[in-house]
Length: 106
Ligand code: HEM
Image (cartoon, rainbow, N blue to C red):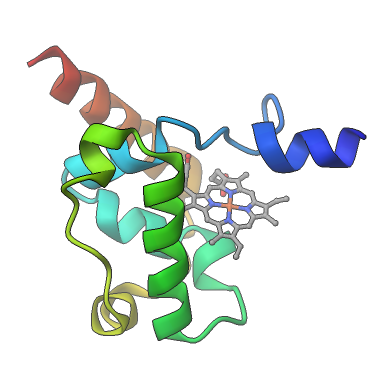
């Protein structure tokens, strides 16, 4: 059962919970590149086209709906342009979370 929970909820302190949050990355500078460049995305065995479709599905699935209703879908070309695994993930994620929180205050 723990495995099931991890798949749905994320894992506290390690794997992030995507619900109502994933789409927020797309609203800030650098966020589109980030979701392509996290290891789960960039290093997956998926083709650029499949990864684009998976990210589009994830964003529609997890929302938040205000974002997923209006976001510009990823294409294989955009994925190809940015698909280099991030090295300084934690640092980049922190900067993006800060941008997200400032964006929401406005
Ligand atoms: C095809 C499979 C996967 C895709 C498309 C994917 C996609 C993503 C995306 C879009 C993010 C950014 C969201 C955020 O930072 O809040 C993310 C972050 C993250 N994902 Fe995944 N993921 C995949 C598999 C996995 C797996 C199997 C794990 C570990 C069990 C994992 C662990 C993480 C972690 C820890 C982060 C936070 C950033 C980091 O420290 O790398 N992901 N993933």
